[in-house]
Length: 195
Picture 1 (cartoon, rainbow, N blue to C red):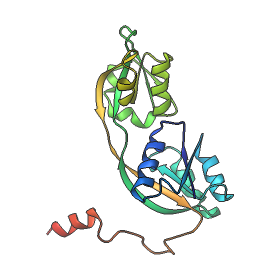
Picture 2 (cartoon, rainbow, N blue to C red):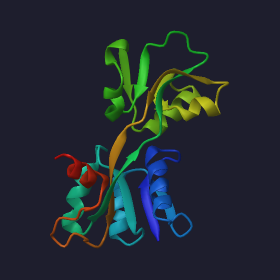
Picture 3 (cartoon, one colour):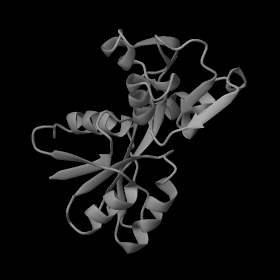
């Protein structure tokens, strides 16, 4: 079976989708392809070129992707997963940078007032690669990049991770028009303790 999610390689979407495949024991049975945008991913599933697509619920394209249920793309699963640890990465050769590269949905994770100039970039993976390559002097990217490239980068401020909601799409509607939920979920256990 083929899963599809947003690239580029090293993206949070790839990271979380691989964790999802591992959770279901599918890593050896599934192929994971990366696409440049969710319209292409949805089209691939609808045309049968892929079986499933994984998308973060807070991604800006999520609303238009969910709307495709009227043409045959259906939500089949949801889950919660932490993302990769984030950090403000700074190039070692940058002296007092004032412009911060950041993906718009991650902007609330930091104090915007500390940065006179914000440059918006499409994905966190692109911010990270841009700082590594010297396109940006500083940016909110994946903390692991500083460990992999200590000759170029250091962590100026560690941010950490958040738990995001994720959606899985396929061509078969699983809810059958009914509520589809996990009765023994960790949330259900919390509800049972709330007496």
